[in-house]
Image 1 (spheres, one colour):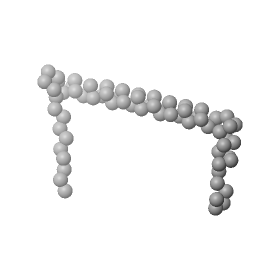
Image 2 (cartoon, one colour):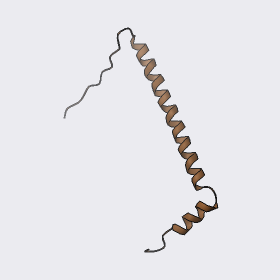
Image 3 (tube, rainbow, N blue to C red):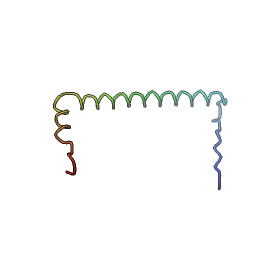
Image 4 (cartoon, rainbow, N blue to C red):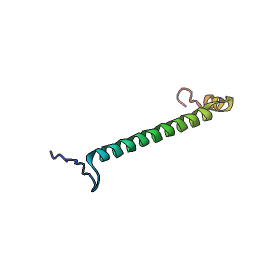
Amino acid sequence: MRFLEHTITAQPGQSPGDNEEASTNKLQMARSEADRLLAAGDDAIQRALSGSDSEAFLRASRQQGGE
């Protein structure tokens, strides 16, 4: 089995600490964006399922037995 080695190289003019800080900031930004997207998706699902019309539709479209 072959293993690939991942190395982090600092860009010229950057110290290794700068690279770690930039990476941490990118990770935090990605997590914030993911949280925002999850919240927006949850909100859209709640709005789609709320109200009697969608509930009636779900009840009417539910399969019975071997249909």
